[in-house]
Amino acid sequence: MKNKKIYLGFAVTILACSITFSSCRKKEKSTESTPDTEQSTATDNNLAEIISTDIEAVGSQVAESSTLTIYKTNGNGILAMSPCASVTSNTVTKTYTVDFGTTGCVGFDGRTRTGKLFFNFSGSTPATAIYYRNPGFKMVVTSSNYVVDGNAVTINSKTVTNTTPAGAPTGTNLTWAISANISIVKANNGGSITWACDRTKELTSSYWPCYYSQTVAIDWTKAKVRVNGTATGTNTKGETFTVKAINLLRDFNCAPDVSKPHRHPFISGKIEYTPASRPLREIDFGTGGCDFNGTCTINGQTWTFTLP
Image 1 (cartoon, rainbow, N blue to C red):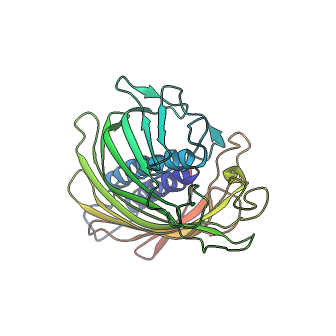
Image 2 (cartoon, rainbow, N blue to C red):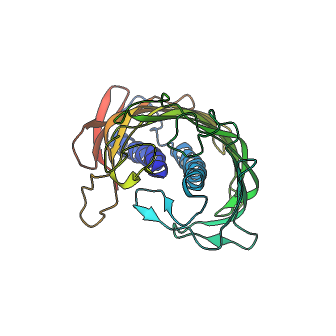
Image 3 (cartoon, rainbow, N blue to C red):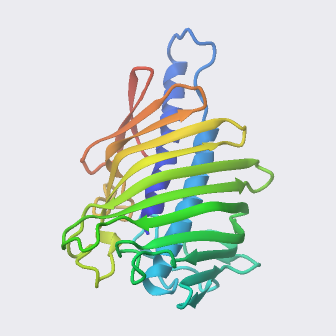
């Protein structure tokens, strides 16, 4: 699914904001002895965002097709998973196991995975809600020895629930509630991260060809998705951080750079990001223009930035 790109954008933007703020502050006369250059929190949040949303993307595809033939993620249209990942299903218990093996399964997204992910849809209400698009669909995720690019991941809890009203007419925006609590031991003795989120996701373009009815699978390449909610965690230094997404909107038909036709930035909405006791960063993506531009405000001072 497209979520990964959504969440990846959080940390990339935060990092750009931090760098911009630091460089500007160095040029100013300030009463502070040390400029605000903290960036490690953004990096750690970025890793957690990627891993958590990857897991959801795999599960949503399994729930739609019982296979990993395609893997919708990272804003790159439809990416296929490496054939080394196998899927075992049990239609009676409504469970799926995705096994990436023990030697290193390299996907077409370039990431190397080992271990297993388990997806349980048995808690869906009604019982006929077996697809990600179905109102009442519920997906509970657990794992065993799951490692991504050398980062060992423990899923303490992860749940995705389709909160769309049952019987909603065609054209109703589909919605999901997403909660997660994961722990990560970074590769190469890089330290440990804890990360938890509570977010809502809304498919705002509930019309053909993106989504037509419950009998037709969602085409995420035509989607507009809005995200709200929060995340909290601790970085590898043991410092806490918070992230708040406010009406973030991504249009997957918007690609400002012709050389990157599958790069789809946020076109509106804000991110409020607070690393430990440092000043809040407010990141604003504007009012809907199809571009890579935004502004970052810290302590009442605002700078413009362009995402890389």
